[in-house]
Image (cartoon, rainbow over all chains, first blue to last red; front, side):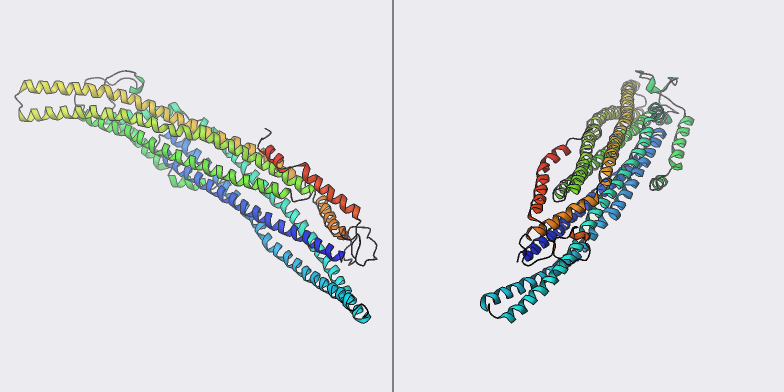
Length: 291
Length: 291
């Protein structure tokens, strides 16, 4: 009887191995799928920021415009790498974890098969015990029952070894896959983070090299320009144009006048720069990382 | 009249500057806040994964247990850096962007003040025009109105310059802050990604050095152990114990028997290892990055 109990105990260990794998692989799968979805949402938000930065760039003077466009382009590049990260997580991490469902189902079927054989062995044993109690002198019946038990026992022993192999293969595959899946996860994350460091280093340089003073000069000229445009025929003004832009003249209360020509030049240059780098082109570039 | 129109046009440029800043800083603020929230959710998911990995580790044999625990610890470390990223984004990016609300409100108030003065100038001008048309001979009234216009014009001119300075300061601060805020954003991201690369490199080594064969041997011994435990008094067995573990004997259909002593040793060693590294300790370590 004890060998039957032992087999029963062994099948429980095997079932636990499979149940445990099912439980944790299922959890890993749904958590990593959620992790991937959250990553995709982070990418979406950053993509929105890229669009806003590009829109904003178009409302700024050339210096800030170029800085913001280049910065937005780098930010878009990081999102492209994030997109690659999402796709690779789906292919190399989530898919293999999902496939475990089928794998586990198959192993469960093997265990079920074993349990039926085990049940039969138990039945034969019970039959023999009953015979021994009821008709201890019926040698022929007892002998038949003993043969039945032996046959069932051989079946159970054979299928136990088959199951042992199935579970051994299952466990080996499980451990291998765990190592592979999490190594792939780590590699995918590592590649993404390394690329992000690279692109953000470039973005940092872009922001560092932004020339605030040049931008402010542009802004002042623009303000002055708009102001001066209507001053070609001032209502009453005899003050000569100051030699330096108003913004640099301090507390002067005199009306600042600029020539019509200069204003037109300003307007033209602004329009020209706005046309040569349309937003669509920039976005197109943003979608294709250079590495 | 044209200087009034010019001022009107200038105030529109100024208003646009402020309105634009309000619009885009508002959008940047809400997008970056959303980006930070998504980052926090990514951290939460990864934290859940860390907990599951630790739970799973406790159900595995020593080799996989150690590997999964160390891997979970590294994954937790990345989340600690992500948490630092979230906090720094809130302090150095979102807060300064939020403060812009107050800054813009103040500048709007200055523009409103200017508009009132400008309105007065317009009123005085209209009054003078009416007088010139209705009573062109009333020199005294016209002279009075001209003085009124002159006074209003001086006021408008004075406040224009004040406003010009306000807008100049506003623009300068805006450009400076943009550069600062996005540089901080890039720095925070860069530091996080660099730390992540570092920790994931260690995690990769952990997974690489996992010894599958040793783990499988443990598993086989465990299976054998449970199987053998009930075989001390086998139902009917005259087969001697095989010299090698069952898993390595191939297709043998013989019942595998192990001594009671050996089983107890196995059980004891498993229990001992499970006790020496409680989950709580591991989690505690996970919350404190070593760098």
